Length: 229
Image 1 (cartoon, helix red, strand yellow):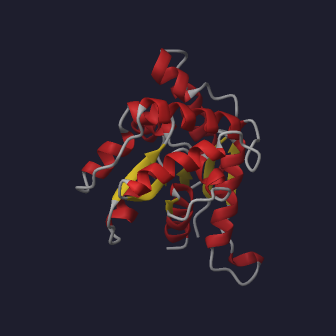
Image 2: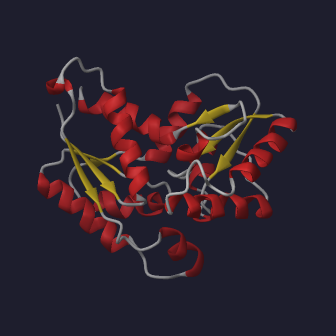
């Protein structure tokens, strides 16, 4: 059994969500069957979105330091519950000797392995959308994604910010998110990717019946698979 390191804090609730989903996905019958996990919740990592969109301080140094911290603490396998931070994935992986599972590539692999009909819409941070992290990963699997229009992206970004402030069930943008989802469903879309780790936290409070693709749960499932090999 491998020891898993969670490079967290981006944001803290998303880190808790991944930890919980790893536990839920583990086929355990007692405490000892569960995976050893080291969580480094480092909310002081500079904003990934601000770095990408506005050229503010890069989070690369803090991300690398956090990954090394986890490796030195005894982790054999790393995961990072922040989609936008995967813009620096190669820099982090090059700085450590253990494997960092790529959350976005893992999502693309999982979706490509299933039969899908209808369009897939990406709900992610503006930074993730601008850097085309999901678009490139899915294009490599011959899957195209629908990207929300600028006014829709603004609502998604505001919903993410509110979720980071702890507003989930009472998120003031839930109704508008549902309206956006309904419009895409009317146009033929049937699946929505929670391409920011705060979005799956909001999915459970949506009133729309649709296929919700949760990269956090898919990552948890892959963590369990690799840690228990």
